[in-house]
Image (cartoon, rainbow, N blue to C red; front, side, top):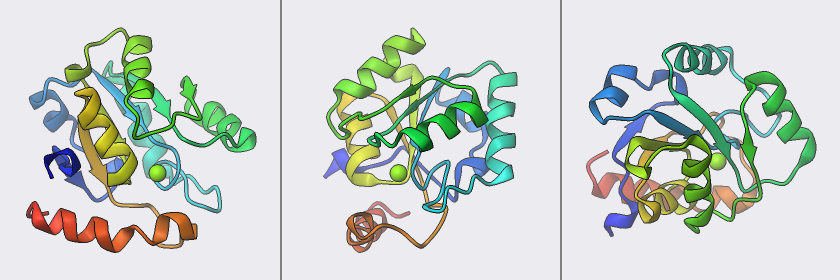
Length: 162
Ligand SMILES: [Mg+2]
């Protein structure tokens, strides 16, 4: 079961503590898009924009890794956050995670994956030896193909005491 286990669980991207990242020796951050940076109505919370800017100021290297191939959404993310986006990533396969680390020029254990899904973000990160940081989804309203997995995720997180 340990492949499902996140190293940390946070309420959302903007509550992630930089001191905590430093304690984990994190130098690079991989960000998921859907329900991590943006909700299904394409809203991006101001608090997340501020957190990302702060992360950049502090010198963390950032990259986006998403399974999406929706061009409008990807363009929006690039425009708002000004980061490289690796898309159609086929998470939880580890290839995309390793590619992201290579782009950041960091070892996987110096990089964290911030995402809202155990079945893609956390499993993939664990497979690639990237540090998995689970964030709760921005919005409760989700696509059906994500929504059905949430009860299972909740029981797994509970199993780990989160
Ligand atoms: Mg997501």
